Image (cartoon, rainbow, N blue to C red; front, side, top):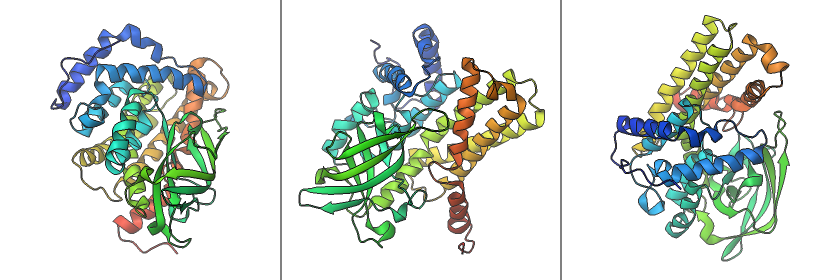
Length: 385
């Protein structure tokens, strides 16, 4: 078992943290090597990366930036973003629950009852649990305001009925943040309430969906008279839209910062592996990823300072999908045989990353929606008719 590093402090500077964490990665390179070459199936990946999560937690690294009362060591959000960036640049995958940790964890810390947050968030940080988010529905994907999953007030609990779809890794999740309709059918964003639901609650059916990669990365969730205690309501009744917007801003904060770091590492590998890559393609990919890095840094600093971002992170999401698609389009153009014909491990990794990049303009808010948000809410252009 590893122990918390004596050099860790909540008031560390970014440079101090980088230096200390890089030294730790070097010192533990032999024991961490197992996390570089992951199994090819989703279940095996989750099992392996949960070990990595626990090792990073026990050493204290992924406790930085979280409140002490919630299992953290204190400090600003930017500290934990640096850890994820350094992992990516050293060629390690993110811990298995990093996405939900950074996307959903802050919402539980801010909106859940204190006793609930104190109970569940440390389990997520330790890698003992995985969470998922139940947002999209058939007919209500990018347009969350039209969701129809209904939560009916039944005294001390809600009764939930409906369906969610494209829920990432729900088959492995212990809990789920579910957006429900508690207002009238036409109440749009004003009638949405967020609930924190245990996935083993009677009435929940999880149906895995096989993606183009060949793996069951997504699931549909069916809720049939699912009873959820009122104590699992996040924030106030009817405030689910604001919570959803907060979660989406977090998705474009530390999680997006890790994504751009991973793309930089992938670009380095592409330059090394693909002699046919033109300078123009490599330069444009570098330009897009660097622009994303600058936008992501702005978002991360704002989140770290507790500032409300509004719709500004729509720029981050739009550029992230643009950069990711361009990067892997460049890989396909520069080494088509690797992506299309070969079956060695490295070729399969490139192929999987290319196929997954196709969804980058859809998940987390479709690119077309981001264009409208930027045009109407930021640039003040007329609404689309």
